[in-house]
Image 1 (cartoon, rainbow, N blue to C red):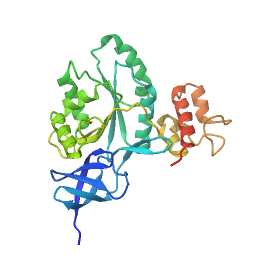
Image 2: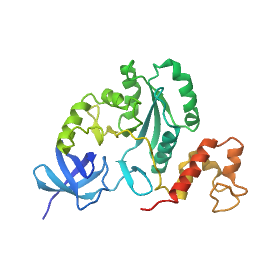
Image 3: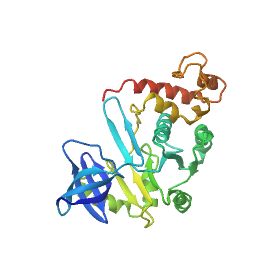
Image 4: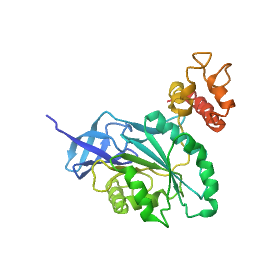
Length: 299
């Protein structure tokens, strides 16, 4: 009888995965052309050689974070408990990306936080804080750090939030996410080189998602994902979307029509809240966009 080995997926590149089984790093693949495995997944491997195996089973996930476009979905991470969106005073960040990431987190039942990096760029600080205010008003915590000029303070403020959690960091290029990872995971660069060699990715070390254990604590995990500019949410259905906008909650069920889409319908409680300034127009516009996208899905 075949014996399965329990392991955690710690890196993914294309259809090639690296798993950790009690400290042993194992290369693994899926059967056929399946790509339904995410970093953070707990899996069962069937070993084909001393350091290689086939993923036969994925254990039930506590959470799954992913993005999608019209044609396919891209798994970001499984079993994470919180999402950190890294933004900076410079270069400019996209509100659209932040808003979509927050919606994705709420839809997946994952706590979301925003890290404002490069607070040493004083000239742009007030304006950036102002831009982040709408998210703070919705209850998303914002943590200010300067990875470059005050590294010890950055670690001291973020480590208590990370302890005992499985966290994923996302952010556009240039926000300083890599600097933060290197502060929080002192041996990150060594680990990346090892993973890169194991996955045979050559020099493309920034194109794969990877998981680190930090602080010598097995239940404190941080996942670093490649920088991306777009966050498609084509996979979210109408019902999931209205619930993923937390500020809609007090008004759901208050519309005249039970199947109200909160777009142009008469006597819509959500639209009334937008007009009254209780829901930010920017967020309602995004909701309309996402609703439109969810109707375009082809997969």
